[in-house]
Length: 246
Image 1: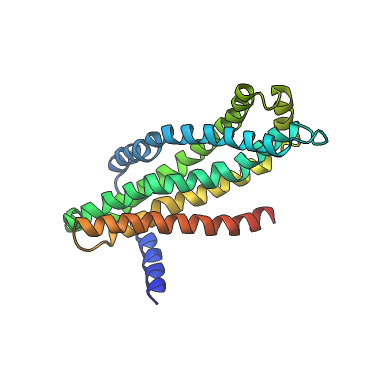
Image 2: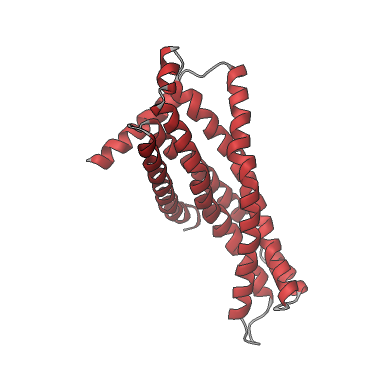
């Protein structure tokens, strides 16, 4: 029953988030700040991880297609499919859940325990709309850009890995990338990214907004937020894959 209670409170929170919007001048300033905090400051880690993940995928694929009967262009083909379908949208979203989710939960939780949210409510401000809606819009706007960048850098990382290690020729790798390219797979990845972005913005916000106690409870709420956000992303990944590719 405790899980059902949390699910109910979560959807009640979402209803309040989209009610009584703030003035555009106030909302715009908050939105740009959230884009910087949740999006721009995540560029570095996404670029670093996606580049080396692409390189590892390409090298591991090359090691497993060592037979002369298997064409080498399959390395590029497998790296492209792996990065577009799974590694970029899902793996990077789990990383963002850890980095961004803990920040959202701890920042809102700190405002809760220091009674800043109570002060907003006393002033007649819809605190959920003021705190959470800019985060939702920022993630929905910026995370597809991050994931497309992760796709490109992952595939490029595989290309660089092949050149540095000499495991395969660049011509074979490029041919594998171009082979049987389906634009729907990119749309599928972006649809997943939008769903995951919404989850990353709202579940940590829920844990932070309803935290009770002091700084210790804020830390626990941040940990729970990261865990549950990652669990929901993995579950939704399964169902979205069945729906969109099954």
